[in-house]
Image (cartoon, rainbow, N blue to C red; front, top):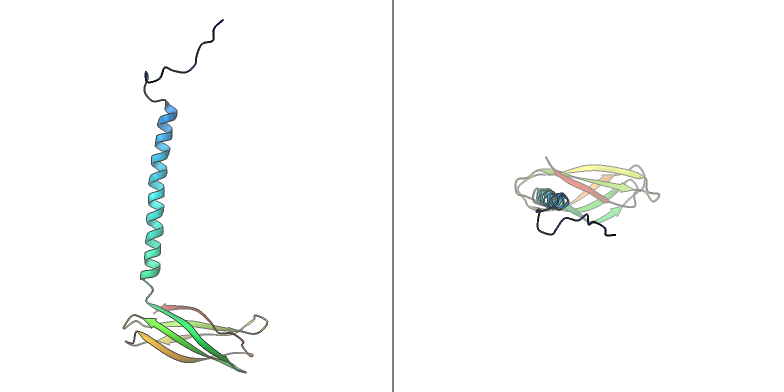
Length: 132
């Protein structure tokens, strides 16, 4: 007794529906991957290129009811903005937070600012800078 083969002869009837579905999935996957890559690149460019003001804490000096913070700010000429600084107590509780404005045409500003605190602060942390 012989068994009948359920496979089609090779090359006789063209592609099977499984092969067509695989090709469609590959094309759709490639298009979606390219779109995702483009979106990530666009967000990355705008995050880096649109930063018009940035800063860093150079040093700080804690006191009884304030913290002296030395900030170095870099910004585009003519851009106005502010930086938010906070201080925490030894137990981690926030004891002070303030915004400091930076205006003018200078592109690099070194400034010592005083952050008032409700109790002795042990840190000075730059939370971020924004234009406006």
